Amino acid sequence: MQDAAMLPGIRAAIIDLDGTMIHTAPDFHVAVNRMRDELGLPPLDIETITHFVGKGTENLIRRVLAVDFDEGGADTHFAQALASYLKHYLAINGDFSSIYPGVREGLDALRGKGLRLACVTNKPVDFAVPLLEKSGLRHYFEIVYGGDSLPRKKPDPLPLLQVCEDFGLPPAQVVAIGDSSNDAQAARAAGCRVLNVPYGYNHGESIHGVDSDGIVPTLLDAARLIAA
Image (cartoon, rainbow, N blue to C red; front, top):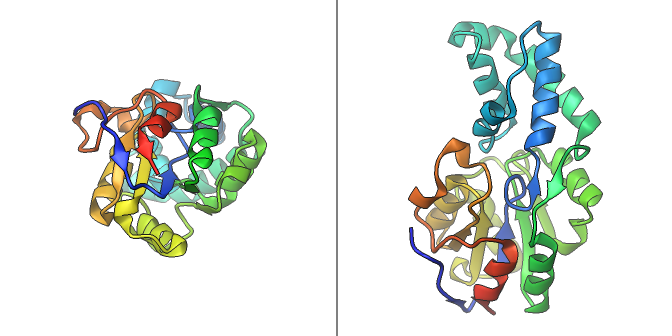
């Protein structure tokens, strides 16, 4: 991984949500442990839960159940655990989260350069939109796609390609900004440029091993590198 260089000719940005714009791990921690309590399971620490974040809600719940059950046991408890988790997450969505430094400034700078903005996340869209609204970020984005908005989610390129089609732009004029390998793999497969932030989740692995166009300390730093 190398420091990011200037990215010329960019006309739109696709920005991830969890771990990129908003520190949502505390919300996951509360909702997961309320679900586990209903199932008679002991609580997990926030670091463990954070490592499970990034590939959608179903994957999160399966990994949480795998702490206590073999594959068959996890399958048996999955439906109950998922329903419980969704109930608890909906009740507290955004209550324990915080916006990362430089996010508002970065979004203002991107929009000031005339870039069109989309948010693409693997979080269910019915959770993503209220979280963006509660955080005061929804108005920045023309498009919000969740992990259940389209047939496939990141790291599949489909959501990014859909945004490019929506905006009427070739992928080479679109940059994806995210905290994990999901974002980088989706962008590479779609033909978009990609920048990573270093402070997010990335499944508990170092972001420095991810193939991207560079690491930027904040969203504001990303905006400074983008030449519209």
